[in-house]
Length: 172
Image (tube, rainbow, N blue to C red):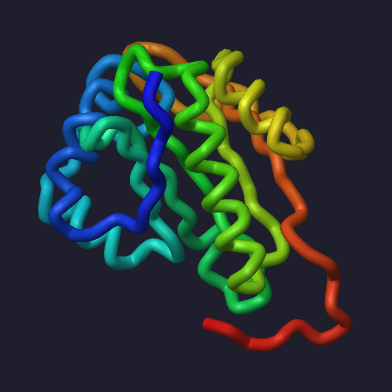
């Protein structure tokens, strides 16, 4: 298998990201979105993310990972929520790990202190990836999301990204 190349997303990647994301929206509870976002909406999300990375193999976009705000309040400025999505059938190929490793390194370099993962469970692959990359459990919200005719639990985990400065610099 060819190596994975990681790069920063561009607006032109939105259609391929939509193609990857659509089956997660329509066929799973991995995301709680009900409707597949438009290409224009994904372009807006790419532009507004703290960081959005693309994984390519042999020139094909096979996945993406991104970080966005954890909460809107200023005291949370050093925390972010992270997500990763791969083209169907590509779990456990190293692409998710490559994306998250680069994303977490970039976030640390930018001054973020905490990355938060939010995972609909059961999802052994995602929990396993987060655990392998140093995320630790925070808790589970039971029966918090309704999708596809049932209630679903959401597992929260976090990873420290850097040291705790006494007075962190304002960076956003």
